[in-house]
Each structure stands twice: as C-alpha cells, then as structure tokens.
Image (cartoon, rainbow, N blue to C red):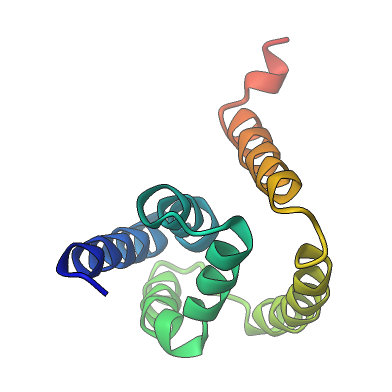
Length: 130
C-alpha cells in the first residue's frame, strides 16, 4: 500500500465517519463510491469493504452519543426498535450479500446508482413537483 493510498483511505474513513455521526450516512453513500472512484475498487469489493467497516466497534460510540443525547432531549431511542431492526438487518445483509456476489459488477453498480438517485429524489421532494 502506498502512502497516497493510505492518505486516501484515511480521508475516506474520516469523511464517512463524520457524515455518519452527523447525518446518519457513511457506508453506502460515501464509502462505496469513494472506494470505487479513488481506489479503483470493483463494486462488489467496495460494498463488502463498507459492510466490514460497519461492524459494532465502529458505530458504538456514535450510537451511544445519540442514545444519551436523545434521552436528554426527551426523544429517547427505542431499544426494542433497534434490536428488531438489527436482527432483520443482519438477515437481510446476509441474504443480500449472497445475491450481490452473483450479479454482474456493471449491473450492481447501476442498481446502486438507481437506489442513491431514488433516495435523493425522495429526500428533496422532487417527486411531488411532477
């Protein structure tokens, strides 16, 4: 690994971490495209790397901060919802990863872009302007 690659990786990790803590995004929206564009990762490789990074030790501090602060604000996080989402997220990630590795890398890249585009349209309420 070159020094330039290390700097790029550190910048991607820091940027994704900051955005994850700030607005709840990071892995799919920041890390995957950054790995593809700046490190020439294949789509499968970038997605797998992003999922590997999102393991418990990485998100625990951000989650604890939100848990404590939301509780102070009178809008606590519901641990039942978290546990149910986590359980189904694990099952879904397992199933999705098995499907993803069987999909052609160009098709997977297009599907990824469509999901990001659809999300942007919905978040910006562009779909109601039509």
